[in-house]
Length: 78
Image 1 (tube, rainbow, N blue to C red):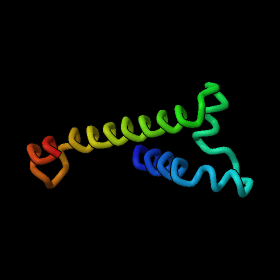
Image 2 (cartoon, one colour):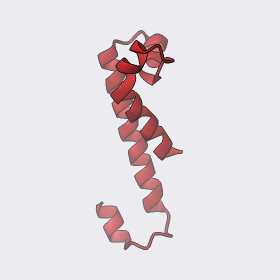
Image 3 (cartoon, rainbow, N blue to C red):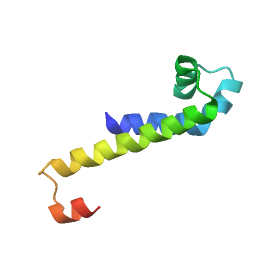
């Protein structure tokens, strides 16, 4: 789930204006702007923070899982 969220939000950040010009559906940035009345700049910053938070959650879940073949110390350092 986390990896899909990161990829979806990153894709929206990279292609959102172009897709809207072609008439595609609203993306996460525009949905956030509509819901909160935020500027595009603030919405993009929020999406970037969501990506960072989700990435951190994904890393924590990986470190918490003892099934990795990598040494725990290496995982914690990474």
